[in-house]
Amino acid sequence: MSLKFDFLVVGSGSAGLTYALRVAEHGTVGIITKKDRAESNTNYAQGGIATVLDSSDSFESHIQDTLVAGAGLCKTDAVEIIVKEGPDVVHDLIAKGASFTRSEKGLDLGREGGHSANRIVHAADMTGREIERVLLKQVAQHPQITVLEHHFAMELLTEHHLGKLVTRYDNDTHCYGVYALNVLEDRVEKIYAKTTLLATGGAGRVYLHTTNPDIATGDGIAMAYRAKARVANMEFIQFHPTSLAIKEADSFLISEAVRGHGAYLRNSDGERFMHLYDERLELAPRDIVARAIDDQLKKRGDTHVYLDITHIPKTDIIKHFPNIYNECLKHGIDLATNWAPVVPAAHYICGGVVTDFYGRTSIHGLFAAGEVSCTGVHGANRLASNSLLEALVFAKRAALKAVEYTQKVALEHKKFPDWDDSGTINTDEWVLVSHNLLELQQLMADYVGIVRSDLRLERAFRRTKLLYEEVESFYSRNKVSVPLCQLRNIICTAYLIIRCAMKRKESRGLHYTTDYPQTDPNQAKDTVV
Image (cartoon, rainbow, N blue to C red; front, side, top):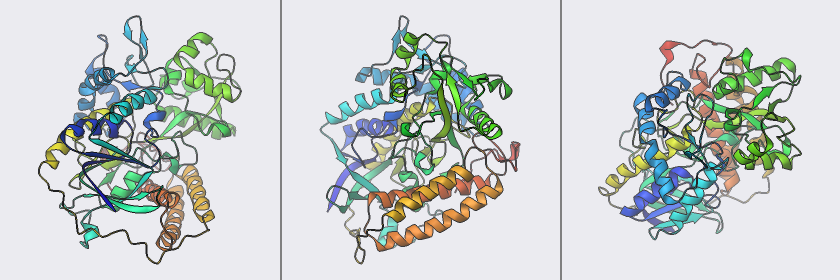
């Protein structure tokens, strides 16, 4: 079975939905999502959208804050694009019906670590959910858009499937859609498209502790890498400093905005400690805060530190952070009277599939936007709340070039073979999948976490290679399933993180190694795989 669209979108977060709504005016659109349409990293984004809307703020200030956080690796042109086009995408969301938090002066602009001004547009502490609500409503009403839920994109359709040898040095590779597993009907389908957008989000599930939902398994990055697209800067993994350190909470994220609102970090003796690491205290960029917490934990043998906002009136806490307050309350923590135990958790990948300033990858007809992409905006460290901004702006720009591309190509792909699963079996040995997943997540947490070394990376590389070989053998003998495909993608993404980390012989931004603790000006360049 096969389906055909002018535009195919893999993923249903802010980038994918924004792009879909824009290209739908020029052709048919298919959105495939591996769970239901509302399940995405966007839906879990608490903080907000960083953009210049106040007269006391300026584009130049936002640009400089982003460049400083990016530690010398940001592409200045890309940063200027998102900053200067940011107000328009926010106003567009408001026009679509987004309800952002307001004050007596207008939009309530919050402030987060690394920002020199109040510029965070937010919907209390559930900004991502509000953006998803608005975009999904528009998508549901559009006659040109079809949403295929419970479809898992497995592989990109390229000349490789027609028997041609495709390499990373080949500048004439094209994407014609995807092979996708229809989960409910248990069959692999061909979904053809003139253009394909990867908007699959991140890969936090590579690590044992992550603020990401279960769907964040690096699918888009792994698919693009296997199709021989260029991938870069995977060593720069942002660990959110403050996830709730309670097992049942599954690393629930306590937003940067809580520290921006005045919360303190304290160790197990109740002492504030950020003054030992950075003059900006709790408002230092995330990598500095995460390393400071990691240092405190290792020196003291503790499992967590504490976030203290008890000096803020309870009514104020509930007004600004209702979701966070209620979630903590579920676990017996009243933020108005109790300190919350917190620990760093994998949160955001600054690298990804390399694109130009219009979302175009190194494969013709394949675009990428959002966390799956590497646009040059984030450099070696993402500035808080720039991620939703980047996703919205680059999705808008990708739509422009995707429309141009579709007008030049025909939709004829009769030669692509059906998915061949002959000779495979359904096995009961799924314990192998769950065991290998847990083993990989543990070794990534132990060896490729906040602080790294050559020895740790070498050990991680050897063990990942063994896991890869085991899983590929299992994959070749068994019918495909979502858990198995996700494990393949997680292992591939872990490999890319390790390889990039091994190639960078310095400490910069989110990549810190004890063997090379200094920043080397000669290495101010992307790590391209």
